[in-house]
Length: 90
Image 1 (cartoon, rainbow, N blue to C red):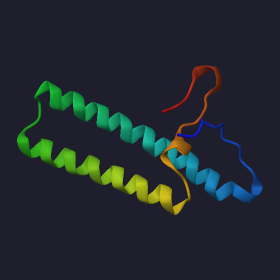
Image 2: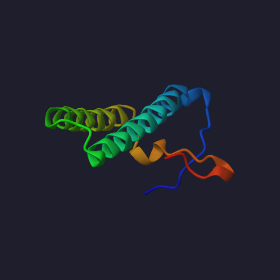
Image 3: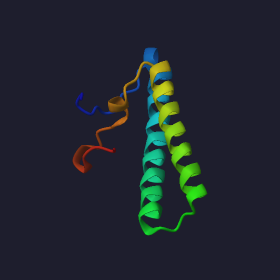
């Protein structure tokens, strides 16, 4: 696992840096959705069909994130931005 880095935009890497920033936001939202889904699973508020659909959707989202990261030459650890005194984002 590499150390978290601050986002540093450079003219020659702007496309990759922008993709990194966008994928970081998407990963944050994906993780929040996953946590909410787990709460709903634990609370028993989902029907078996909803559980199946939600599980499949979360697996597909995770797979798509891996695909997008690979296309941009990024690892998931690259998305964990250093927020200084607040710690890391993810």
